[in-house]
Image (cartoon, rainbow, N blue to C red; front, side):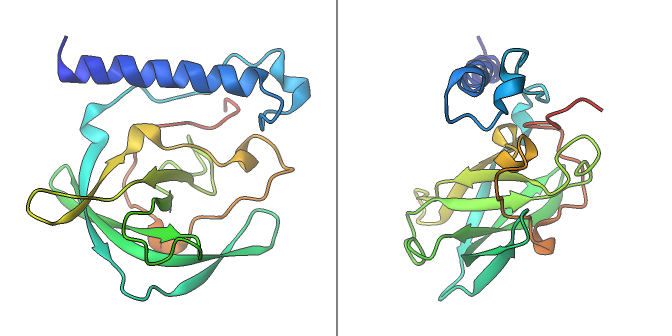
Length: 187
């Protein structure tokens, strides 16, 4: 098997396990009344080309932002890094955030909410999320794997009883990202 085929097989297994969790676990965000008929989430097919290495530019003494949430409140996050990457020869960037407890920890995971040209059409309108782990490349550069195939919906996409951060405008990509989770309910 090729690297791409191995990757697709592992990704599809991960998705099956996630769907099984969402169908059967007590703390699943899928409403209880929908679980018996839950056949799984809607995903784009695996696309190895949207598994990218991004250059991570730390934001020294990152600014605290109060990200709006789906229930009208706000949650504090710290702008921790700018992730620079290329798709089809075009350069893009997304901001990575951390909780206040993790702020300044170069090795802590980054939370990346994003919107793209599919948001509100084929994907959840308030955006999807990625979680990435920065690491040091051999040359000392800080990098992270941005795997858009792992882009997931916030729990509020499944159930109105959850409060989820809404993607800030700065994390809106002008292109369509045909990877990851699609809208929970079919159009």
